[in-house]
Length: 122
Image 1 (cartoon, one colour):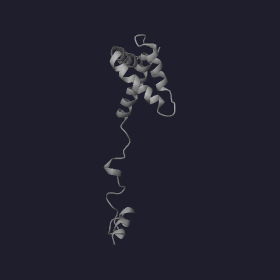
Image 2 (tube, one colour):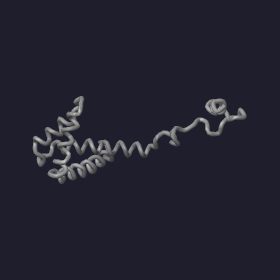
Image 3 (cartoon, rainbow, N blue to C red):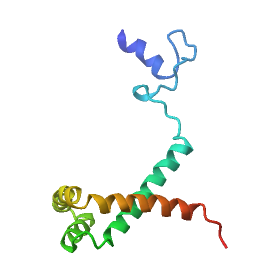
Image 4 (cartoon, one colour):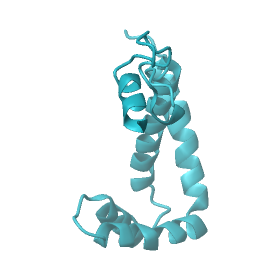
């Protein structure tokens, strides 16, 4: 008897044959509306700033070349856990020894990214 009660609800009808007000059902209570444009722009700006900061950091002479090479190899799409292990080894070293260059690159990425975004084309 339980299956007979569930099937009409799955077809978008209530038990009396009238359309169900909850059709179409939402999965796990989440709204399936598209993301808001402002959220997409924030994510795009954050990603662009992060990539630009990484480019600035890769050229910074205050970070030793071997450490820059480890990070560079860790960013390559190598299958397996090899690249992740390299990044896990490099992250604490960067955090401890290169904190100021990372801050400078993050600040420069913000100012240069937004300055170029609002610059007028000539």
